[in-house]
Length: 234
Image 1 (spheres, rainbow, N blue to C red):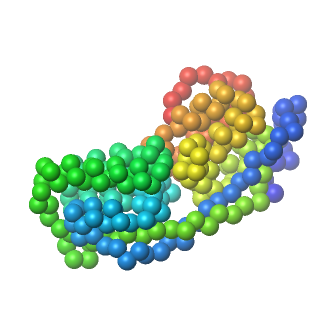
Image 2: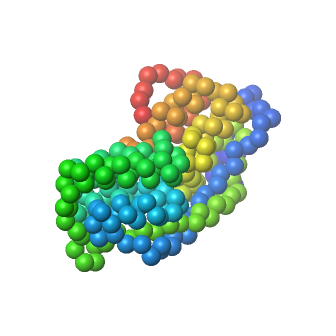
Image 3: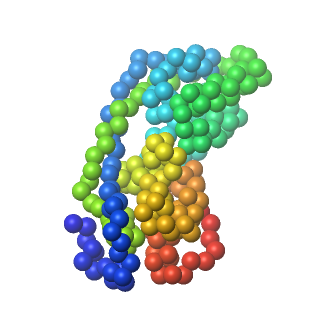
């Protein structure tokens, strides 16, 4: 049991007979694909043939990092740091996997971005030996962590204590599954708190670490529970 559940106050009158929110987590089983790219052209060739799971892994596992990185996906990071093609890296970095959602749409956006760069700079330099881009893929292992919340107060208390991988699963990975974070989705479908849902969905995944996301969600939950919502931005 998460500490603090016995001390909840002010929610008893708000309890509703709704399906509880079940906290889950996801750990990736990462494997190599045998694909390596030494240049932008080779990166493009492998992107055409790589599996969708590999492409999506390199596009979104960045978000589990404990601190913000300069580039938002592995392709952009390799191009910027190993090839020193900073303009291309910035262009790759703005491709939003949560907006594209489907692997084929992400693949197309990446290839189009590389093609535009190759038209401008047809002879880019290769990476030095040992700094090739290695294509990986991951099998997600999803499991319940044994914590549920029946209302917003319980959700807020649990969110303070669950591991970061659970926050990642429900905020980031959920966007790939159904286009919206699990917290906002449950609140909308089960509790109908539209103003709170709007605020949770305004949180930008690109400008927060996982812990930053946790803090912002908690802030919105606590303000909502206190009844003092006012202006604010994600």
